[in-house]
Length: 321
Ligand code: RUB
Image (cartoon, rainbow, N blue to C red):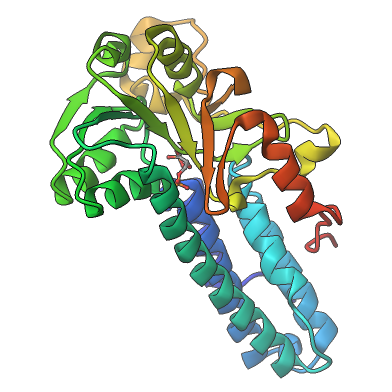
């Protein structure tokens, strides 16, 4: 149709779906940037270049294409909402300008929030601490990096994070900032908790009850950390707060393909079994010590207050047809 999103939007959507672009914050900024590209393309030629309503429709279509890629990280719809809510103007050129500006402002705020959050989280880490990580979270890394910048000496035990081994990315990043890293398989986590002072994880979504939705295995790690008496924090910018949970909706957990768990070549010899591959799980608030945001740190149970402040007016879906 005339509102088909530009190739750049489809490429970004494809990269998010295949996890070439991954991690909640990175997905959010890529989506905001794709909307800016769409705005420029739509203003260039075709009916969207002359008809403001056609332009708006093409932006909503682009947002829907991006929205449909992965269901769990709320930073994605939050990013789309941020940009589309700021789309305004009577002429296509004004509309274009407003989208491009909003996209840039969003990405800048995201970077700033991560820096601020890093400083808040770093205060929970002491000189000489060893942290345990799960998956690859840029928000969690920001806390460790800020601690290192403050002159604290930090070591890390990094869980590899099956099935996609995002722990390897975390290991590289930490090594790059001079943090000594020990990489372990996920099932070794409890054994190594005795050598750890703090568990630091990220989040894809935070629910109104303080539940933390993050990479599969986070909840088991949290329960084990509590049993071992090791504090655990989640580093999550406010873009990870899930507005719909304020009205009692739950967060959809993405189920990914079985080929990530078992090599299709080995599938045949194993035969008739079920394989399931949930990408995320929910850590109940009672197993999490703190949610660290750019607006300060909170016990999970009180995050709802911040959410009411931020989403007081409710969350519309500006990409609806
Ligand atoms: C990534 C993941 C990360 C959060 C937070 O999952 O669970 O912990 O997204 O990341 P996936 P960030 O690899 O399946 O996308 O702090 O960078 O937003």
